[in-house]
Image 1 (cartoon, helix red, strand yellow):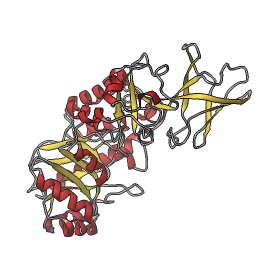
Image 2 (image 1 turned 60 degrees about the vertical axis):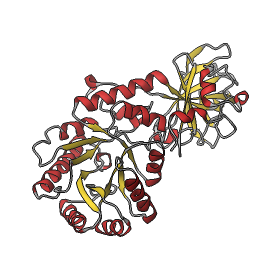
Image 3 (image 1 turned 90 degrees about the vertical axis):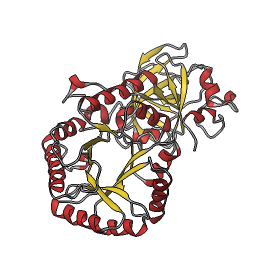
Image 4 (image 1 turned 180 degrees about the horizontal axis):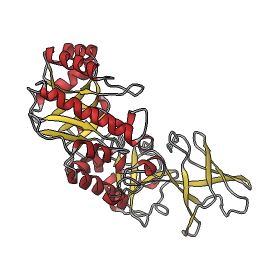
Length: 417
């Protein structure tokens, strides 16, 4: 089994975008120890970076928020797919790491994650056989996954050869997966009780998929989730569980989750109130900056800082009001808004605000930038872009330099997509 520490022994070569060509053959640890300057140290553009102080700040904020609200924390690993970040989250008290798919869980296991919350119903026999093998070979490993259909329960039970903990997923009409009402939840729970290998240990869901994105609608859905948990417990459905898992929580409504879960006491077993926020780890300059609870609903309880920045270069200014950067859809997310020019680095190394620049469109490898004709912007200058949506930023980069505020590269984060 590889370790996170061994990632520093991987060799620099052509597989990794934008690393210095003269670093070929060095290990990542050796390159990090050189503490090169991002701008003068031979890095190519475009290059995605992680700002170390912001990353540390964000890790600290959710660690303390979860602890202060009696929440266990299983941050969603699909955001980064970076074992080095998982390791830091676990070191800060995370219960485990959330996965969306079995292949993601395989990456987690390859790097020693002992607890996985798999937020999907797993019906692939090959995946279920792998899960059984992991559970059987490591008594300390725990995996919990969703069920939301009788057919899913049947398929799981037919493929399993070891006991698997499951939670009934509550969805919402017009939303994503999950049973649509309490009657359907009862039917699925009955199917689990009748199965050979499944053990019902709780109830879960994702409030971010409630169609009406209002505080009242989200709170009402969370109240249903809590009520379903209480009703299942009163009916003795968790008799075989050691603890009752109650889980929800993305990066937009973790305050509502904390408030709804706080009074859940007095059940037949201890309650694991499990929060699953993932995008918080880097936050962003767009979508999440506007919807985090720290922005407006609970600003006194914490803050998050954008840790991702994509550095590009101006490669053309063919018209007075148009310029082109050398980064596009292959390098930057665009599903939740265009990248936002934030800062320009001139040829002399000075920094100035990217006032008046606006990215209007992305091609595969170019960003279309509109600007006023009188705006100073020269071919060759670097432009730092703020990004919207961490999940679709990480998946475009296998290796991401970690930089200090002054541009010194101190580490590299490896992703597995």
